[in-house]
Length: 271
Image (tube, rainbow, N blue to C red; front, side):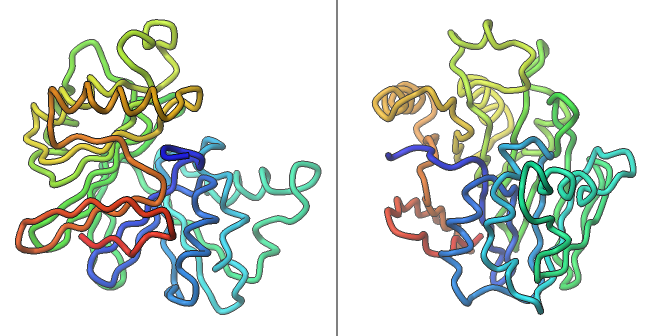
């Protein structure tokens, strides 16, 4: 399988700084790939708490280390803690062990989408609200003169590109975008909270985004369908692509970009 297989989980490195965005089933493979190279404090930023974005969390091997702190971040919870919801989800009869019983210690940081997150080492991540049932949060990671935007899950509006979102992703080096459906499929799925690759390209080109990675693909699409989709998309935006499983995008300070397909556990991507 070239595309998909796991639900959403993206690793972002800002120098030596590790961020994990969403904890879908891919976080299990990420934990295995990291091996012993895991900091004592792990920061996991959730776009939202739907099952496909949190379902891998109990299988994240670094959470089995007693000395480790796992900090979760999630906006749009109206003051509730993500850990309350996650502890209910991962508990009997649905799951045998609660997160609160794991060897690692879990803490939650709540915020409102639109606020700026500042971390212990001075790292800064900006946030933006997204149109999705129950709310979701987009993230922009900046390191030196490079940036990456993570825009999942989002449904485009009638007035598109959205002005606020356009400014949020303005001139970013890489935008990771929810392209679950094609324009032909979308009318049957209106209101589900997802977008199309065509709207992703429209947003990217309107905001001066340098590269576009489409992900959160509909699981009913096979590799041949997605390759054809990618070919069509690249006729409109040559720097756009569909994200592969365990793919690395390396952005260096000189302004160059390397996209590597990794059938084995990916090298740590750096911004």
